[in-house]
Image (cartoon, rainbow, N blue to C red; front, side, top):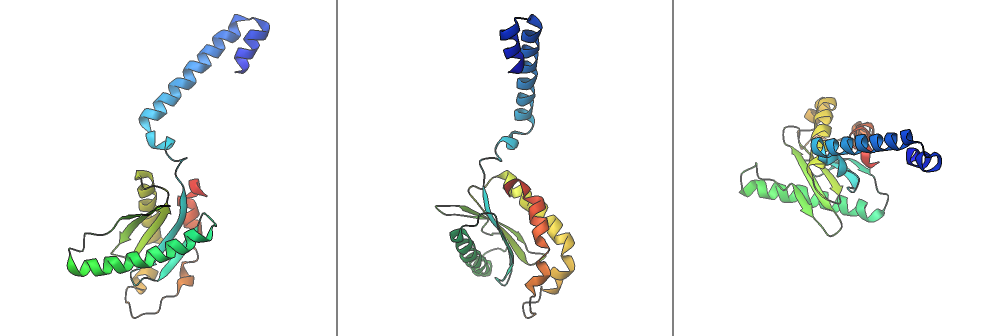
Length: 182
């Protein structure tokens, strides 16, 4: 815009040519980004309300809220325990590979990733489920598994007491992986 304003005010053709070159290069760059990484333009309208980690017993290992409204906190806690219970009941009747991976409500989608080997479920409450959310959850789960592997193996036994204060360091991990939504 500066080149166009300079051309209009000074009537020098070099400014017009520079304006046209800059306009073409920037539009070409945006088109390349649209083709190579179209998901980059979908991040902005998405919103993550909270990230919750549930032990297979239904205990909340960690909960991080991006939206400070109380109704999402209550709703995610309620849906998390319902989800763990439903999957436990379903696993008794059907093949254990069939799990609920999303629950759609009026206000949000509850996207779930199960880590059966480590005995927990990661639930992200978002306005819509998409591939970006699933990729972020996958990356987060991989890091979470590697960092807290020994603690997760210790609490595999359902009769053992779970000290959720051991998972207080998850906040930095959540902020690292979901930094676009903070």
